[in-house]
Length: 518
Image (cartoon, rainbow, N blue to C red; front, side):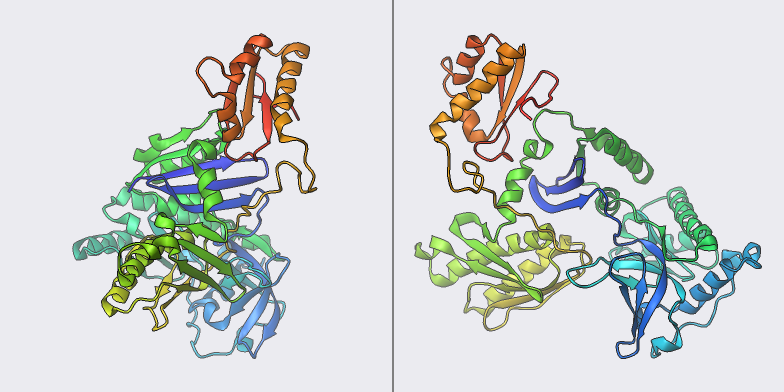
C-alpha cells in the first residue's frame, strides 16, 4: 500500500493528513497551544478520594481534575511512591540510584484506594485519555515511554514482545538481545517495528528512552506542585513513530521549521527513509495540491456518499455513534434483493472502517446494515469488517450482526472525536439573506485587476479563485477573459483555482505571492 503523509502548518494550528493509495484515512488538526496530550508524564497531587468508586481525582494542571482508578495504579505503585519520596527528600537525594533501587512489594489487585492514597499526596502519573466532553483526563500510574522499536517501563524488570512478531526464532533472538542490554529495574516491550533490527539500533534507542526517564527524575527532585515531567512527542512525530514502514514513500511539509524537525526525527528512527521528506513550496495550498480539501469536505458531513448512489448517515450522541446504511436507487436494478443488500453492505463496510479512523470515533458504534436473510452473507460481512479494521491502530472489538442487522463495534477513545464543520456561510449574502447581482462578479474582479495593474504598477498578478470561476475566466483558446484583461491592462495575469474557497471568494497576489486585497 502506498502511504503518504501531508502536513499543513498554519500560524494557529497544524493539520496532518494520512493518505493510503491517495485516499484520506486519518486526519488530525491541533492548535499550536495544545497543553495536554496522551503520553504526557506528570507529577500530580491527589485532590479527592472516592471510596465508592475505588478511585481518586488528581490535579495535573488541567482545568478539570483527572481521574485514576485503583486498578490503574499498577503493580509497582508502592515502589514508585517510595522512590518519589526518596528523590524529593533533600537529605537523601544524592544516594538514590535508580538501577540499584530496592523494589517494594507489589500492589494487591483486590485493594482499597483509601489505603494507598491520601489527599494532598504527590504521585507520578501518565495521561492515557484526554479530556472528552464533560469528563476530565484519565490517568495511569503504570509509566511507559514509547520509542519506535521499544517501549520502556520503569521498575517492570521484564521483557515482553509484540504478538504480531510471529517467528519464534526472531522472538527468541530479540528477547536475548534486549535482556543483554537492559539495565536492572527497567522493563521493555519490544514493538513489531523491531523485527529484524540489529543490536546497535535497539541499544541506541534504549539509551535515549532511559535518558528521557532520567530527565523526569531530575524534575522530581525540585518539584513541590503538580507539573509536567515529560511531554509526549508532537502529534506529527508520534504518527511517524507508530506508522512509518516500508510502504511510506513520501512526507510533504509546507513549513521549513517543521520540515527540518520531521527530517531530523526520521534520520534517527529510519535513516534510509530520510529522502522521502519533501518541503512543499508550491503556490497552490498544499491540501488542494493533494486533493485533501475536497476529501475532507466530502467525508465529514452527516451524509457520506458511496459508490452506486448508496450512502451513509452518521449521527453522534453522548453515549454512542449510530451509522445507517442506505442503498439509494440501487434497489431498482435487476439484481435480487439479497444480492443488492450484500453488495451495498460490503461497500459500506469499507467506508465505515475508514470513517472510524478518519473521525477517530470511539466508544460504542452501532452500524445498521441492510437486512440480509442468508447467514453466509452475514458471516461474510462480519469477516470483511474484521479484515478492514486490521489497519486500525486503536484497540477495537467487533460483534457479529444481530438478527435485526445491527453490528456493534467498540473502539478505544483516547482523545475527543475529530469533527470538521463542512457547512459554509452563503458566499453571496454572507448570512444576511440579501445578495448583490452575481452577474457583476466578473466586473468586481476586473476592477481589482485594473486597480493593482494601473494604479499600483503591478505587472505580474495572480488571481486565485474557486475552480468554477477559474474555468469561466480561462475558457476558450484565444478569447479567454483572462487574456483580454492581461492585454487591456498590460500585465501578466495568471489564474489559479483553489477548491477551499467559497464560490465568490478570491485573492489577488503580487509577484512575491503576497495577497493584495486584504
